[in-house]
Length: 187
Image (cartoon, rainbow, N blue to C red; front, side, top):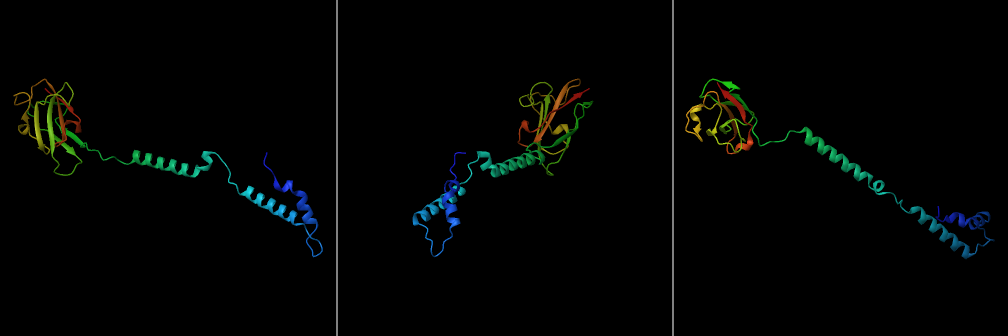
């Protein structure tokens, strides 16, 4: 340590002051008193200097608080359910394989009662977002009779036997991105 220890440097002055208590007959020179006072002030100031620690030591409290807030936010994001604009629709009819060429389309949902949906019957191949709609019904509620579906691309009035199709049910006016197509086959 290269720091000056003012008490050690002025030890002889302190000893002299302690050994000769002030009495009426003994007078301490003013120079010694001034030097002692200066030494005392320097010692007090040197003890009051704040510690120069590392960044982490100085800011460990706020850093810990920030880390805890990040952890709490991550836990809340993982555990709390998100409000998704996608309808929670479970298609109950048609099933995987059907024999009726004019099936009834039904679904259940946890959305508010009376919620309107759009229904598409699509070919099995292609992307459900861009595939041409074979039959469409807009702003309907479950169940939908086949007669309520409007022919889309073709002029057919029913589904063809031995062909694979997909049914897509989405919130009304939300477009095809708000649902998952469910495949089915007509025997």
